[in-house]
Amino acid sequence: MDGQLEFPLKAARRVAINVTQLVRMVRESLEVNLDEYWVVGEVSNARLAPSNHLYFTLKDARSSVSAVMFNSAYRRLRFRIEDGMKIVVRGRINLYEARGTLQFYAEEIEPRGAGALQIAFEQLKQRLGAEGLFDEGRKRRLPFLPRSVGIVTALGGAGLRDMLRILIDRCPNLHIIVRPSRVQGPGAAVEIAAAIRDLNADGRAEVIIAGRGGGSLEDLWAFNEEVVARAIFGSVIPIVSAVGHEIDYTIADFVADLRAPTPTAAAHMVVQETAELRRRVAETAASLAGAIEGAVGSRRREIDHLDARLHEPVNLIRQARQHTDEAASDLSAAVTERLNDLRRSVRELATRVTSPLALMRERRLHASRLALRLAQTLRAQSNPLRLAVAEVSARLNETNLRAALAVRRTRVETLARRLETALETAVDTRRIRLGGIGRQLDAVSPMKVLDRGYAVAVNRRDGRAVVDAGAVEIGDELDIRLRHGRLSARTIGRQV
Image (tube, rainbow, N blue to C red; front, side, top):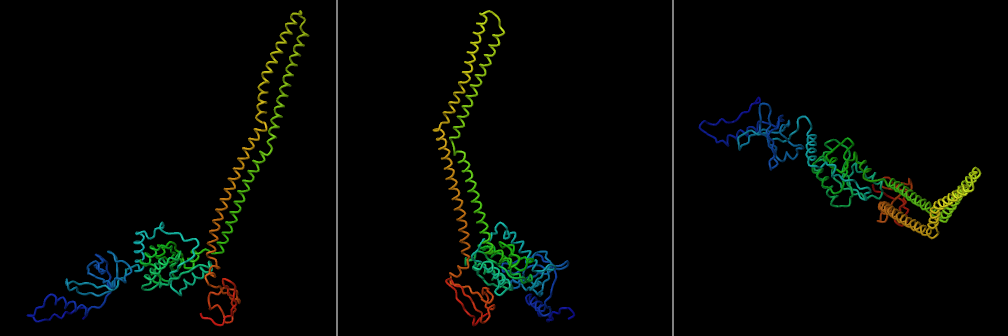
């Protein structure tokens, strides 16, 4: 044919055909003579019909052709077709009989440049981010000491084995619920979403780990599906995403309450180590005891100081009396000294004056008046001091001091009772907190497992707990611990 199409329209001149016959003959000729092709072009006028058929125009600089991708093929498309996108399309050209126009029927579409999966990832990430699925404000804190952990992953995978080993080592009494699901391949995303919803409906798990081991972008793609993202967003139980390795990021990582770089890291994040918890409780108890002891010692020293100040009130009275006596003695000495000085002055004047007797009498009378005025002055000055001394003495009598001492003692007793009440309240508060932590530790105690009918088997050959039948040899002796007592057994068979 040399690339040319031949249409069998060699009818007799007098025989006419209708339009439908003509279009059908052209369509049949196209179907017979043209195979599938890969066509490069730019998308325009893209629209998705209610029937989920995709209609668009494929064009280049000189030509354009209408194209359609039916629902069966469109469901396999991993990214959204948008106007202006450069694509490569595989399909067939044919004639649409209803309008008599050429139409390209697409079976497969790939982006030109970036990969289809990468474009799909960026498109979904942008759309879900705009809806608020990645907001940090809606993400929840993980429970401090969960009693039950749910796991969504594939059975038999390395990720599940690593998580179980870490969880059991860190908290042997932890209740683990594994909801198996495929983690790659067609339908895996739907199974993962269903598993998350099942664990929420079950309600026993306090935190969920959803993830798998490492792989390629195609292997991890199930965790980039919108159905998984919406299941994580709708979960009422906090979810930790643990997909692949540290360098792998999925849509599930952005939606989850916490992202773990690996499944092993997720197990470490979810469960606290029992030994570490016991150490922290012991440190808290020691700090609390030291704080209480310091507060009690400080209050005791304050009470001892107050008691020492009020222990001997008689000493205060004695000191006041002694101070009064010293003041009276000083006053008497001052008066006596002043009189002596005046007398000396009179005698000196008498010796120097040789006047008649009248002058002597006048001088003596003047001296007597001065002496009298001086005595009156001294008496007036000493009376307030005596009254003050008497008042101080009256105020410091034993009755008043006893009343003051009773008031101080009542106040000290009130302070002591308030201190005792405050200390008892503080001790009760710390005791309640310690009791709550003790109950949490008791809830995860290995002895509780024995109470429910389970047993712990230890291989006497190496002293390790038996968690895998493959680690036990025929003839090994086992020490089996029950709720009440122990049993000794010998291995006569095993089933791995």
